[in-house]
Length: 126
Image 1 (cartoon, rainbow, N blue to C red):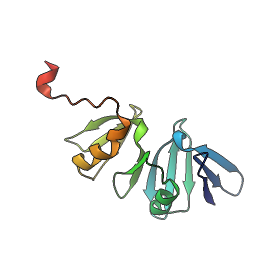
Image 2: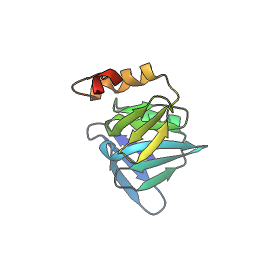
Image 3: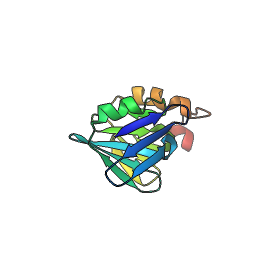
């Protein structure tokens, strides 16, 4: 079972043994695996649900989550770096996930969480 509490921004994950209450802020990314979705938390825990990533996207309808590919939904607050050439995102400096959406679209989706917005080119780094 999966449900959300909108005002508290929490996800309730229920399995046969436990009911887990997870705050949206704890979710780093979700990964599709066929009919299952793995929810990866900041503390390293991972929960597997028998739900598609599309259904999870509906449950996590907060603007802090971005669908970056058919396989990944990420929490944009954990993005540390973007590799333009390899089309990878780095989350928490230790997790690498590929993205398939355009770089322009990706930057538009995460830009509201970057303050202040600073653009540097290679010439600026010299």
